[in-house]
Length: 286
Ligand code: SAM
Image (tube, rainbow, N blue to C red; front, top):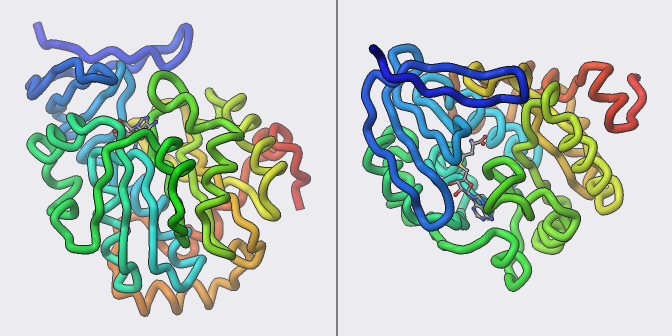
């Protein structure tokens, strides 16, 4: 009888994958960690019973969450990643030649160590890049005591339960704002909108109170069950979100980066949101 991984997506809806090979299962100081191989999605990381990332479809999530803000900004030098223990966010950020330093603040060292061992393609050497500075700490604690400033802050966290609960609070977003350079941008993993609409509403309320320009953009990642995932966008520079397609095309071409999901057209269209999300965040359709 094949072993199964069952995830409770919401009450009445479970997500089921076969565990074709159980690679690692531990309780770290912060969470339950499971890494297994699945015949459809390759190696899978789950934390506290929620799929975080899979070898097969991680490129979608990481390309969109990294290349949209960095190409929209146009001259990113310093990036902060909160979370991101599997290392794929760091890998994608380091592909940009303009980036001089990336600080990654991850609360759970075990996630980094075990993902480097069992999901090596995610970080693909990024933790050894001379531009990388890894900090083991709570993201909010780091931000509130930091005097550093970043052009882009990426919140690549687990969902707002457990160690990541505070990473969706107004206090956290305010701390992010305080660590952005003028015209910098915060991007957040903000859940599968159809099933986590209250999280989207909550982030929107906080963004609206703190930033001049805010919105969400989306992508469909197959193993995040329930539909499109939305990424929070918050900046005091409204122009970042309004670039002409030609500008994004030129920057993407100059970056020399090849992708499997991201394109300049997708970049721009990703900010177009379905009406139910616009209604939830109190934004009119154009
Ligand atoms: N791509 C995944 C997703 O969309 O949900 C997230 C990937 S990554 C594995 C999430 C990371 O956030 C984990 O390594 C976890 O340890 C980290 N994390 C959770 N709470 C944190 C906190 N308060 N400060 C820093 N890192 C945190």
